[in-house]
Image (cartoon, rainbow, N blue to C red; front, top):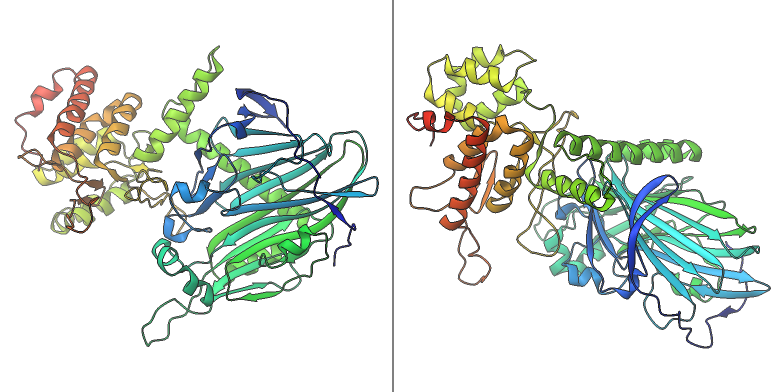
Amino acid sequence: MTRSFGAIRFGETVCRTPDAGVTSGFATIDGVRYAGIANVDRMVPFFMSIASDSDAWLFIGSNGPFVAGRRSPDTALFPYQTVDKILRAPTTSGARTVFLVSRADRTFLWEPWLDGPRVYRITRNLYKRIDGTEVLFEEINHDLGVRVRWSASACDRFGLVREARIDEVAGEPADIRYLDGWHQLIPPGVDQETYARYSYLAAAYMHHELLPGTPLGIYGLNAVITDRPEPSESLRVAAAWSVGHPSPTILLSDRQLEAFRRGADVSAETEIRGEIGAYLVADAVHLEAGGRHLWYTVADTGLDHAAILDLGDLLANPEQAAAALAQAVSANSAGVRRRVAGADGLQHTADEAATANHFSNVLFNIMRGGSFVNGYAVPAEDFASYVREQNRTLFDRHRAWLEALPLDLTLQQLRREAAGRGDPQLVRLVRAYLPLTFGRRHGDPSRPWNRFSIRVRDASGKPAFGYQGNWRDIFQNWEALGESFPDYLGQFIAVFLNASTADGYNPYRISRSGFEWEVQDPTDPWSHIGYWGDHQIVYLLRLLESFERHEPAALAAALGQRVYA
């Protein structure tokens, strides 16, 4: 149980913050460089994509709500909806924070980033890390003399990570009760379609519990949501946990949220059934003048029994868990930076905005079109897998050669050896092979056709190679990637030609394993959104021009080779 601070003052008048315009610039906070927007709440809310080095993804609004998950929209931690629905209110989904700030025997309710009449003079600032891996929200309450900052990022080991900190900035001690964490958590098995059409039914299947003796919440389904008369177990769960709270009271729903806002005590929840989940921690802290309190809240999805037990063991030592979190978040930023460096995205000039913009452009380019992990090195095992996937007869014909390929194989060496085997079909596949990774279809909640699926590692933890995307996105991004890896330009051209038709059409989507043609649906006005020859001409032209600059005369020499589909 948490102690009560008595009657809550909600403010008797609406306070007006002196007019302050929106400004932008760069700032260093705790040793990290950010691009920032001051007074961001004076702007119309906008949407951001936060990058990760793994299959963990995060989209977040400038007014606070967000959606995150693993791999695809169907494995989201929060309801995956269109942007307008996510941005409609700060409490849509994601994080929720309530503070009860006591000074001189008076207690004040403060809910950062919440819309509505202003009862305090506040300043809201937004910062995004230069490498794109974190967003930081800051609200300063000038009347209460308190500042809150919270950041969101995603990493491979733990999924979604939120760091929150509250600072006393008035120079006087303060007692603070707080309720903070996630709300609108959904478990695996509630995909985008299920939530959109059957959210009320899905909630009836939900079962959330607190792992005894730990701050670990587990969110699952009693059974797979189906109307078929057959047994169907749901064996994976979402999980949420936190470290940094002195005496936490953990809630698995938002049932007691209003009671906390009124200043009442709340009771721990160990099991909740039949409603969408939450992970809210109630606690209290005394801040000396200039003092700070910091805590972490984490969420992940798709966990099995072993993963839950591993998390429980980790949380037995909160200091070790906090150190592991910091290491995982740092590793995520370093991984993103390595990928961008591999595509010539690092530069340093006197114009910091231009430097940051170039980094961002390259980052989002490789997030769509993919990147080459080891330059022109070819993973022999993956190339063999590619041949088997594309043409089993050809694979069987060259099995011995494929199995004998050296581990230090290069693209140039692969081309020479394939040409020496005298098989045009083999040469054709070599010409179209691309050891790309990290790429995914251009996806975000703003457009319904921008579905995405992120796969950067296989089940054994090795890099997973492949690419996928809408036709336009793929070749736009490969045009830029070809400037960093010009020896792959011939490969890009081969993929383009092999997927084009003689009558001027190209597929709707393209991937390493093949391509998808648009399928018209008379009842769906958005089914006819493919691309035609006007796109073909300009994209192919740009690739051909780059190839000619890199290897003069090679293009003309290839015109007579029968190695394209």
